[in-house]
Length: 161
Length: 140
Image 1: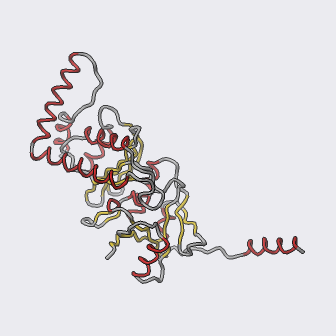
Image 2: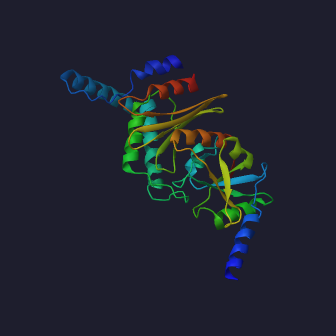
Image 3: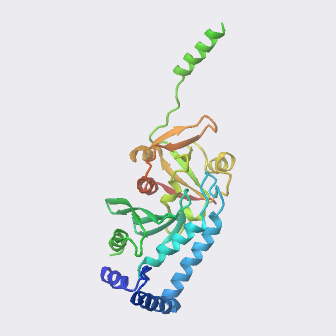
């Protein structure tokens, strides 16, 4: 599984900000490749389902105090950050569970038995995560750039290896 | 005389017995979004325990109550939203993760988990551990 994830990372949609001719060409190629993958039954269907789930849940939580405990509403900026994060993940990673935090951030969670990785995405790209692998527990903060933070990918690999 | 009455009131307040929670006492956190739990895999997600903007997580003491009475408390004194389920856990869990339970006078069975760290990732780590020690109860 680790090998599969590593190989798959090559096909992850990057969001580079290069402006040279080469960069633009590369970006277009990657985008075309990504579009091709998106229309396939396996990858496309999965992305479609995740995006649908994001939208449905966004509607539920886009009002103040959606949980009755004083939660902040989820904004379009949060939704945008959630989309950006999802697009940086290798496509071979199983679909995450989607939930919301009281501060209005989207949370993505992956479970395997009793192990888990939970990552909350803030509108400014801050990723707060906590994970458990058997007796080993980790947590930390990363920031979303052009790619998913290495530590997030590493922990996902650990979870599904 | 007024001064003496005030003084007596203050002294009485000082010696009033503060309600305490036994370590084995069961607590409940009412779940108001279907995204806070998984019926298929029978667990409560850690986000259900994260604190609100006042850095508090609202819970209820549910010792010696029937199942129906617990749901009734949720409807009457709880979050005023549709309650889909609840997370049951022991008061011990709160101390295990080095948080504290502060009881309210009204509603009488209400309390707040307090002492949350400021950093979100640390909050998630604490909530992860409480969620792991909790049991999901779906509302019939």
